[in-house]
Image (cartoon, rainbow, N blue to C red):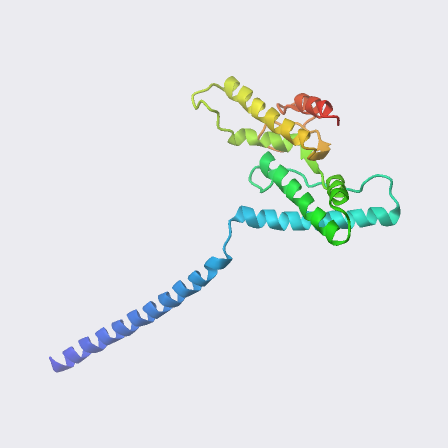
Length: 213
């Protein structure tokens, strides 16, 4: 019995030591995680900050290259909208990214001695979006109609109305500087000829014309 009890005590001590080590390790993990909190930020904020710095820097290079070569027209950079799964594809994110990039470039230019209004004009001329209407049509697969019971035709009509509203806003604010006209059915980048899919290309071109493009 004495030997047995010694074995039991030894086993309990071993278990206690194991538990203490786990507790110490867990405590360290808690401290490590807590130390990260001050550095955490929403992914959207991080993406926007990195994007605007990158685009503004690229646009500054384009502007200086344009001046060095004596080009007659602005040499602008033109980020393109892509898939709904990527940041910057939604028209509101797309607009915000370009607007904030222009503000960043304006700041860079004023730091180099340009006046505010001149810097603002240069930034607008050197950062413009490439808008692919076919890529924009990809949002069709994620579109949620106001009436969940609406039929396909009603959903299509509402989706086209939403697209038109977004396009008008982008055109009004001079966001678009280059366009890609390719068609698809809203699910894959099929690069069909205009009219062979269901992207609202005709409406898109009409809206650009209305805004003086």
